[in-house]
Image 1 (cartoon, rainbow, N blue to C red):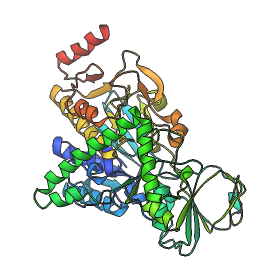
Image 2: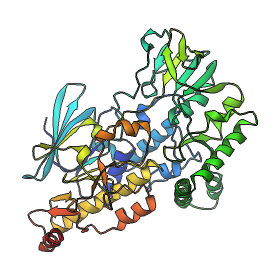
Image 3: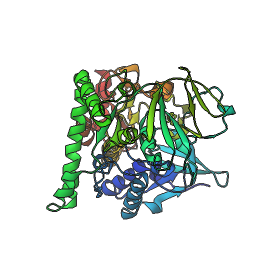
Image 4: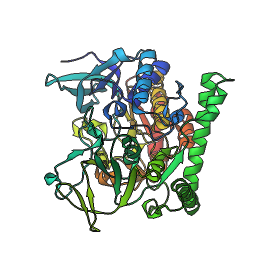
Length: 500
C-alpha cells in the first residue's frame, strides 16, 4: 500500500515522537506530517513496561515537555501517569489523527534524484508491507530493542521449576503474593522493583554482581506545591525546571571534578538511611559517581524495606540455577519461587530498521553524529537520543526545535537537501555515549562515533546544547544545503569552506 507523500515522517509515538509532532505543529504549521508506531497505543516505553512500581528515574519537571507543564507534585512519576501525560499532550495538539498504528519500520531508503525517503513498514497484523515517502524523516524510536530485553547466559536456567520473568515483558495480572522473589540486577529497574514487590511477596532479594550508587530523592516538590498558591502553573513549572536543570548539572560536574567528595556524600546518605548496622559493601561501587547512570530512591523507599527486613541485598556471582533457586559462587543458595532478570536492555537505534542512501547501506558504527542528532553523510534525517546524565526530554525538546529550524531554513533558501559533512576528518573510535555501562559496551559496534571537536562531540551538557541547537548558526560549514532553487550565496559559502 502506497501512502501520499509527506513533508516529515516521524518514526515512533512515544515521549520523543509525540513531542516532535507538537514542535512541528508549533514551528512548522504548514507542513504535512505523519507518525508510524509499531504498537497499538502511543506512549513507547511508558506503554511497554508494566512491571510493579514502574516509574521515571528523572524528575518530571525536566522529563516533561518544555511547552506543556507537568502539573502533579510527584518528582518521580509512575509509568501510567507518564503515559497519560503523553496521551493528553497528543490530544491537546491534535496529533493522534496523524498516527498510523501497528506498523514496524523495516527500512528507510534515500533517493537523491527525488530528494525523498521511501520508508517501508510491515503491518504486523496483516503481514503486508506499506510504503511511505517523505522529504524528511525524524527517527524517535528510542534506544533499545522492544522485542526482548537483555538476559545473559545463566547456567542451569532450563532446570528451574519456578517462574522466570524479564521486566520488559511482565505478565499481565501476575500474582506474586507470598512468594520468595530474587531480582537479578542492580540498576534502576531492580531498585524500583524491590520496594514495589514487598507489598505482597514473602521476601525480596536483590542479587547483584557489584553495587550501584543509589541516591535518596524527595517524593514531592514541596517548593512547587507551595508556589502554586501564588503563581500561574506555567511559571511554577518553568521555575522548577530551571532549578532542577542547574542542580542536575552541578551534581554531574562535581561528580567529575570532585568524585571522592561526591562519593562520600552519597555513601553518607546511604548509611543514614540504613542505620548504624548497615553492611555498606552492598552499596559501595568500585567506580566513580556518574561513570554509570545513578539510581534514585524516592523518600529512600529501597532502604526503608531493607531496614524493615522485607528485602535484602546480596552481592555475589551466580554459579548456577537449581530447581529451587540460585546457587552462588560463595556457596550460599538462594531459595526462590520467582526469578526476575532485571539484567538490562539491548541497545538499538532506528527501531532496527536498515538505512540506505542512494542504494548504499549506511554503516551507523562508522558514521559521526552531528550535534548528537544527525548522521554524517545522511541527508534529510535526524534522530532523537536524549541525555544519559539528565532527563531524556531535555535533549529531545531542543533537538526537535533544531530540526524545525533546519526545515524552515531549507524552505527559506529553497533547499531540498541538508547533509552533515565532516570535511576535516574529525572522527574518532569513541562511540557517542559517554558511559561505561555494560549495555553501552555490548552495543559499541552498533553505535555512531563522536568526533574530536564540535559539532561532532556529544557534549552531554544541556546549557551548551541549548545555545548551540536553539541559537547556533545553521550555515556553520558542516551542514551542506543543496537543491534546485538554493541561493547562490549558500553554495558559495560551502564551496569556499571546502577549498580553504
